[in-house]
Image (cartoon, rainbow, N blue to C red):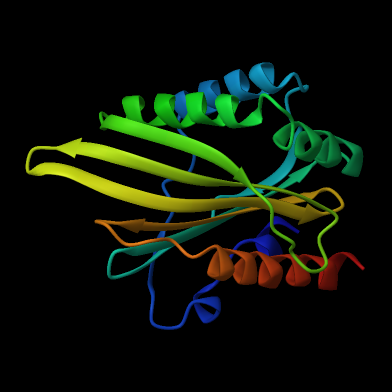
Length: 188
């Protein structure tokens, strides 16, 4: 089921794909801290698919899909993702992730956004704007992160543009819809 929730090359014509790096020990620790911050039990994963990273110019789209122990567990996470503390919790997770990669940021904003993904039964989403400090100056990064799914399958889509462009919420939403429909097709 997790394989169905991750984007594939035919979903992104004209993009170049590369295997995702997966999850490091630092990523796992940040994920555990996120659950504590949100006040939800740690997810129990039956299957995980970290997907591919697709790029075209300054745009990167990546996806992942997780199968958790139950639909109730997925719904609890989605409700927490829409809660009052969610933006601050995710901001902390992003800051931790950047720091673990040695990336210095001078600005980071995480704002909840409302989207509708046809066919999904839960959803939460954020607009993430960050300025990365580099040796050649600052680089603005604009991203939409959509967390959606069907039953016990959680799908995450990231649409990110670096260097001054704007990410597309419409594109991220469309791609999330493709992934959710694929999951629904195999789960009934």
